Image 1: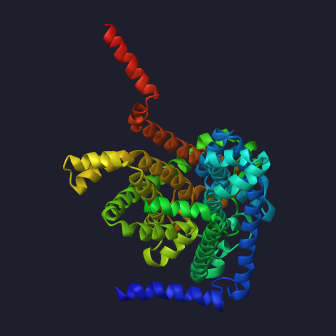
Image 2: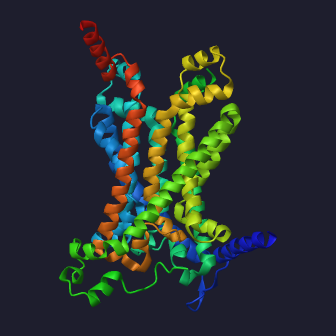
Image 3: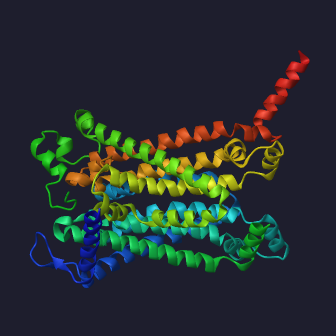
Length: 242
Length: 260
């Protein structure tokens, strides 16, 4: 039992050594790993994910707000969400590699396709679920439809929209880990090329990818809380204590 | 250990070398002759492995989530830590999860199953909790008034009324697991992803299309099965609404029987 425990602790120890100091490569001559290399791959991983998320937000957010405000296209918004779930990440990357091409721009597009459905569905549902009396009150005060959508519905729908954004972000970071299959060197490269980086590199890559995902999730959860209007929080507390 | 990114000769090149088929030579997307010749050798076993991964991990996830729901039902304080812990596991990307487990559980189907099950627990448990919370007070009070004990109330009133949400959770879990299980081959678990990952098959268009059709097809079939189950199991809901189709049918039947 203790042998087993020490065994896997050793593997994780090697992984940390790989991250902070670098190690001898098992096949190729020379050093692999180390903070500089880790930093390079981390930057690519984050840049790729951020680019995909920015594009997805630019498409899904306005579209979701428009459809939700008009109460139109429910079938489309919900079907997009279901279709997005049914399309495997690996298959999407493989389709891009085989038919469209590899490299940073192509993978960004692939990840964007992955990120759009949850944001679109949640924005649509969030906007549509906004209390109609609040919208009627705004209309009665003479607000334009645009102002109603952006200043009444959007803030009230923020928690639901952020749930979709979190789902997308985690999915994008996870899928960016297999981007090396499409020749983009993210943190996943440590995992997918064990002949270069060794077992320690594989586990180091897994630790780094997991930590990145957890960090982003934590930050977005904080952002979600910050974006939730005070009134909505109070309402929720009141409902819970009731 | 597989070398996923090794500079191997790609399947497309390999096949083009020893195939006289023009379609293969050109790396075509619709080489139906090749599919007909290779389907049973290349795709049947991975499809069955995939079904195994999905089936076992959804069943295990459901059983464990039900256990957690029963535990946390009487002890409400357990709900936030359960949601939090499974939420953390859910956040860890599957690729990372597989290799974080590998020093402990080795490589193979079991490692893949552990990770997939963890994701399913999160999805299903969340839905069970929502379902139980949404049970109206009326039926619970009625059950208590009839002298039901806590467990009786849970199994005979609360769980049956939460069935729609629980089935919705199973549906989401199953469809997402079909997708995530394509990565199980990285953990040594096989499945449809093995046809993409192993042997640099990723550039061979026909192969990628076959895997896409199989994986997406499997997800859609599961989705439809659960959708139909959801409809069947929620018939009483529509019957309860006075404007519901079934109640109108019921009224029509009553009117006819009265006329007879």
